Length: 140
Image (cartoon, rainbow, N blue to C red; front, side, top):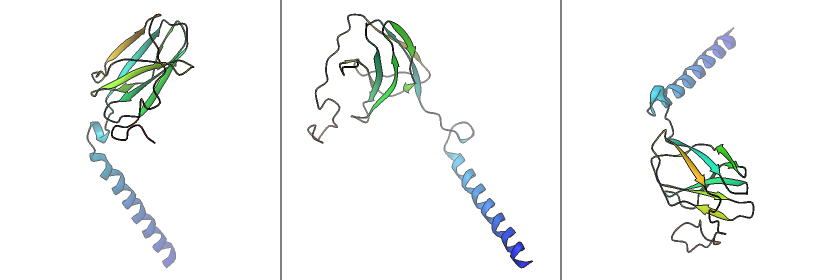
């Protein structure tokens, strides 16, 4: 009988401790304790004859590329949301690895923007150290 009571007390204590952990995390801000990411939506209109992968680089964390989707030749696609509120560099990459990059720009939170990649857009193969973190001279 004592074992059953002891088990119930331990189980109750575990439930209370778990509930305390869950409610303790709720104060992180936002609606109901949920912190929303600052994102913007990008639509890519690919007027080139090649399928492209679309990615971005956050200028705050050089070298961290995030691939957000792909768009076929002569087609349009909505890619995964990108960071908003801070400068990012959008890039499109061909199957051969050649890239077309835009200058760093910021998007407003919740914005929707269409990137039209013209049929005569220039693509270049990146240098081996193009995305290397600053201060390391591009060395691994």
